[in-house]
Length: 338
Image (cartoon, rainbow, N blue to C red; front, side, top):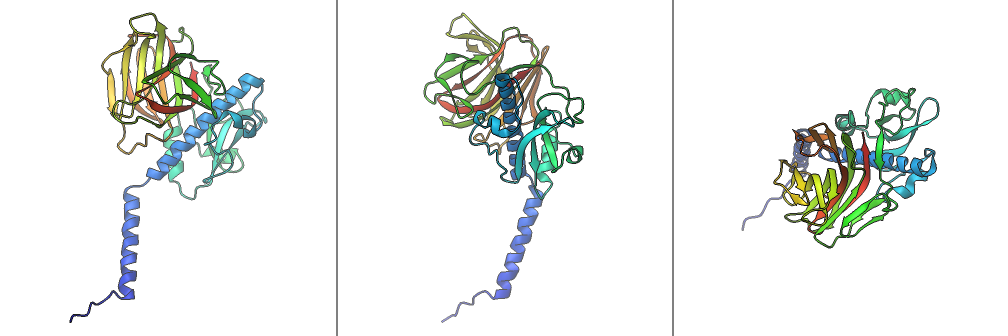
């Protein structure tokens, strides 16, 4: 009868060491997935806090002295207390005047910082090493809300055309379905095939839309997602409502970003389209920036340009949101600037 020989302690320890070395090598070869997700979350949180600060000023005529004053205007999912090595706070310039919102990071590694610098700079949020010296406490991510000559790294902010007050629907016009605000978010009802809501002025021409949204649930199979109307207006036509303009689609069914021309509610075939990144989590918040200047359209998702093209079918118009096929989504930050 053969007697099975077991592993010795030395063999087991050697195997564990080899596994550890291989795991470390894999981390070096494929760094940053969790770091990039963390960086994206921080940028989206700053955009939400920036929008809430603008809402506060519109309602009170003064800027918030702390985040406590705007806590009711943001989703409860956004942790205002220090958590996960990130502390959010309001930022003041050298004269002690409100300048914007900031994130203080205490990450031991540099991965998140470097990704933030790559994603943020030039997109209205700044990750500048000089700011570590400018603020006590090691601040290195900043989102300016108001321009200040004494603030070293804040560029002059362009004129604000629209900042959503997500405590009511007063700024919006509902075209289809049921929409509601809850916990600092704008949401469509999760039932029904098509939901549309619009905002802004038909005279808007060259502007930048900044919207943070995420898929919550509902039908996320084929032919689902949410869209952003721009240079669009409701017009009488063959379908009710007869909206005409451009529609950017965050298409979770086909996992694509695409733009269509809409005429009296009828959508064209995609003008331009591109696949989403394979590892993109559609259930996480994502920021979409749409900038139209003359005939040029530039669209960024989470700071990365995904589409850039020229088309002059429509040269002015307001903005809006839509979902389809019972997609459940929420929007936590909506602003438009010249």
